Length: 222
Image 1 (cartoon, rainbow, N blue to C red):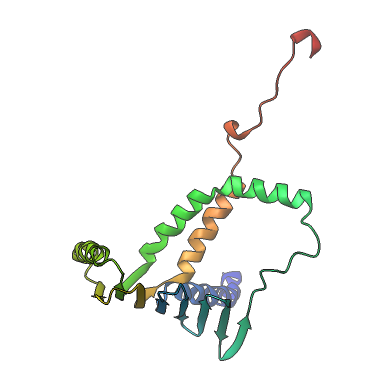
Image 2: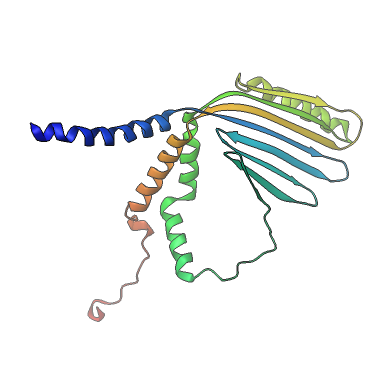
């Protein structure tokens, strides 16, 4: 029995991190989303918004004639990223890397992966989502049709989702969208489920249908 008593401290050292990891996975976090978008009759538009999760946040802005800009805030530290779409890779991707990437995507299956990600909404509880729409068109008939369609849509939405609209009858093209929402999520459980799915798919053997067909010659030539 002496060995059992001597192993208790080591069991405690292993048990505490496991409990902390389990608590971290099941601990819910608050996710806040806010966004604004606006379009004018001359074709100009602008989109801006932000996402906040625990100690991290992301803000973005994009508009016509303005390059997209992302701003990350992690534990009080600000990081700004402005993508350069005109920049090309200095070196081409090796052929073996492209082949390996295609095989990996074929095993995982982009459609199946997207469905798996959609299934992770069970770890999300929506508190509220408010969408404000203001729009108007030169053709008042089009404005009326959109008003009727959105009225029908708002009647079948869940209680946590509110769709509020303000049509304009000034005979000018323009629109404005405002989104504010809050949800309670468990992101670590989502990541673990998706990672486990990807690992299972990568470790599984490819089905015989995915194997390339090899033409067989006459029996005396084999």
